[in-house]
Image 1 (spheres, rainbow, N blue to C red):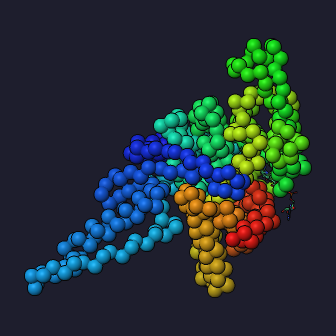
Image 2 (cartoon, helix red, strand yellow):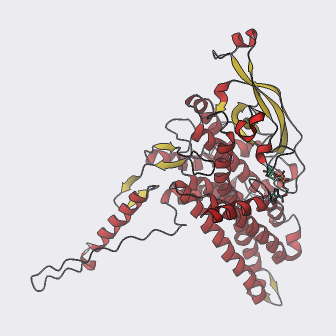
Image 3 (cartoon, rainbow, N blue to C red):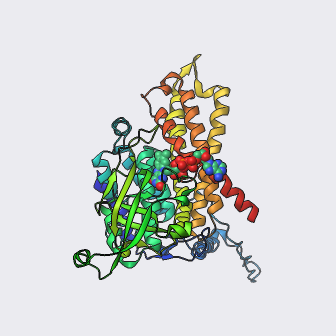
Length: 493
Ligand SMILES: Cc1cc2nc3c(=O)[nH]c(=O)nc-3n(C[C@H](O)[C@H](O)[C@H](O)COP(=O)(O)OP(=O)(O)OC[C@H]3O[C@@H](n4cnc5c(N)ncnc54)[C@H](O)[C@@H]3O)c2cc1C
């Protein structure tokens, strides 16, 4: 059963001889970085897959238009007078709707949907929520299916699926439609950690971590602390450079005389219990303020790292959220991500992209509530000898919400495509993160009301989605922080 889904992804990969290259152009904290371009591959005259370059897409449409206009039935040339009247030039092709996925993206969507139903079924989801932990079989299967290395190039690193950023969001949305806890694990792992290493990691760091992350190692993004939340760069964790002792030098694999010693406590760290790789933000020169913030990639078993007891949360219970304490953890400089003092820039860029992933999670929650729970129930449930879905008071409510969910979908995939095409997307990402959280919460709340008494019980997942979505307006930028970002960008336009 599992291998069938994995087969789909492997088949997909072998069909398309892809090349993945990462372009890093940003120098300022708010500039788009890391647009990924995949080589277009034509598999048949009328079919092109994963076209991320506008020009290639344009050519495909033009090709199709020509094929159509040169067919006998559509030819406008006149032969009756012996003169050939030239056909009018074809109109310029218009862009496809934002939600038109490529054939391969649709295939991925169907594969995840089917896996979710079979492996992550509502009974398993309820069980994981009650036990506040992710079932090890599910966790292992996330790797087997290729969901843990979505954008990693399989030609360079074992286990990578070589898909696009849009595919990541499709996968996150589909997983959230069954379990938002699994979706957040996959989201943070792919959009926050793997993509940061792909973008800014040295060759050695990529070699050391990317295959591992795609095949066995869950990761955590360690930024927040007890006193630094929205004001993230007031973090107190330090990474002070220090000379190695003779014994340390003889034991280490590198020739370096210095290493960094990390001390501090991170809070609210998702995946912490399951993770073995950590992306940690620490200050190498506290006197420089945020300009000393540096990112390190480390193995959890690499020193004295203590994981706290998971927080008892309102929702996302299967996803562990813990404090992580670092005490004199010695890290070689080879494990610095990118450049010293650039951590705050990387962090901003990671979160800009991450917000689209959170929006995909919130979209999945909203769709699950309306389309998988509320509408089927409302159609079947009768009161006053009438299906409750036919009462106008109900119709107006679910029609309104369906419209709002559609807007979230358009905004989410518009932000994805903008990112993929290297266009500015920060405002769009903040807008959709903000709006998706509002609509997911509204939809989950309404779903409980539409189901009446049963919606308030654990017999259906509506109450769980209601609990799970609330954090959408808190993590990776609270509602106020998103509004602040949008306003700032509006002022600068
Ligand atoms: C379930 C969960 C998982 C998380 N996972 C991670 C993780 O994996 N890694 C990680 O690093 N962090 C994680 N976080 C932390 C999360 O990112 C922070 O909680 C979030 O950034 C808010 O910070 P805070 O909780 O300190 O709230 P605060 O920053 O104290 O905010 C409290 C309130 O004040 C408002 N506020 C703050 N500043 C302003 C301002 N300038 N203008 C207007 N209003 C303002 C906020 O909008 C909010 O309403 C997680 C949190 C949760 C709940």
